View 1 (cartoon, rainbow, N blue to C red):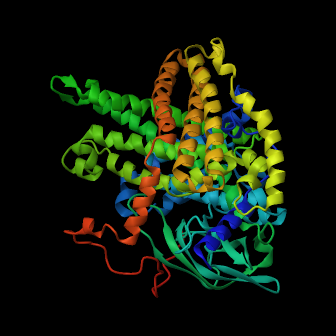
View 2: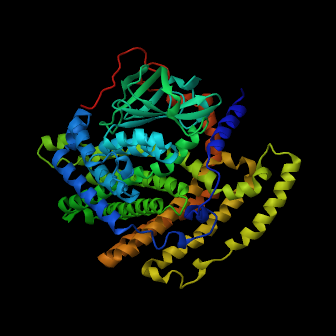
View 3: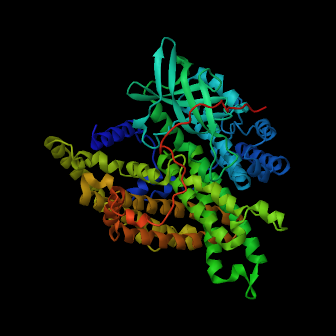
Length: 623
């Protein structure tokens, strides 16, 4: 099969798995179309008093538990979450936060699921990963969305009680390209027989239940699998740059028999189930990122006051002060984005597939920058481990650990690069519906003619709406006081963003999907606009109790964000993308190997992509 054919097959598999209907409105979808629908997010949805009270009580209970029972330094040192901590969390109901009460869970809203993960993530990111992998992408979420009543009654109470689940999709040679999936599930009477190897199975070493994605014929299906089934072997536990406490492994399935009733949904729906699960499952990552960033504010404030250099507090020197301002404003914005997206998820009136993806992308990218700046502010102490700091008599601030732990957020549950492509596909859906065949290089002449007429009708109606809007009115959004100008900027910029997308489609047509740097900037602009909207909404609400202080933070974030947006727009058309792509091709061809001269590679020899051979089963049970 040619490289072009393989790409086409992978694209087709991904396209078939997309949720193509838009039965509910989407704020972010309209934002990319130049239609700033504030009515979809303002006023932000609220929760019933009973749900709020129950959620607050749970978060307080988690705080007490963390303070009394969890030692994050021990988890970092031993690279393992103690069994008694896992069981204690289970007793709190922390493994069934969003599972309905009728299935043994707490039945809390996503808002309080996120607030709990923010709290846990600020204290011990590995513990937050254990909880989120179990609930966001493990057995509970796909069963809640696609499971039969029998499956829900059999497995959800077990999950809520603390039986840990894991999600098995990735393989040694399969990352974001599901067309390459090699694990198979062959029907044999009332059972399926599964064979394959799964990589990076977070919670997989200690899991009781698994969601396994496997190929049934040419399509992918999803199954609930008992982790102790004969034929399942955890070949090894992987170790990483950060998150040392996570139980992540390589799982081999050899002739594993699974009852046919354990099929989730229908045959061939596995990838759609996985993608739909991630729509709300991705909310856990922004929550953890919010916890990281909020913690960074505390440390930056305390260290900025304590450390004195050249006769002044280090936090008052402008070189450091700009970093402190970035940290606090960004932390407030990440929290706002996470909160708004969770509220929209709870409200269920909006389709949040783009919002959740934007939240994941924005929070993971910006929180890493926040933690990187914190390490810089701390200087040598930022690079030193907390254990070493304590050993020589100083406060054990785990800044370097938090930076290491957060780095994975830009990779798992969809790398930033894949997230940008996925968001772009959804954001330009209206264009593709109207003119898809027009820019499709494989379309026939008749299909192009029909698409031309369809596109003409769509753009004749749509393009005039991008000329002017409420953002041009000096009194618009006056209810937001000092932030009104920023919302007018968002409205104007959303129209500019839509025009830029249209110009890109007109210029490159069918080649647009390969202009990934251009599309990535389009998405990054949209993410900034979404964050600006969220932070203005949060500040308006918070100001009722906190006065002007939230406005000050929101204004600071928006000022910083506007400059990033301006730079992104400049780089849409003034960049070195074509040169960079050409040089990258030369690099891969070996044209510049002279640059590599004068070094020694410390890498251990072995195949670039492989699987462990032999060895004992390292799966362990929480006791």
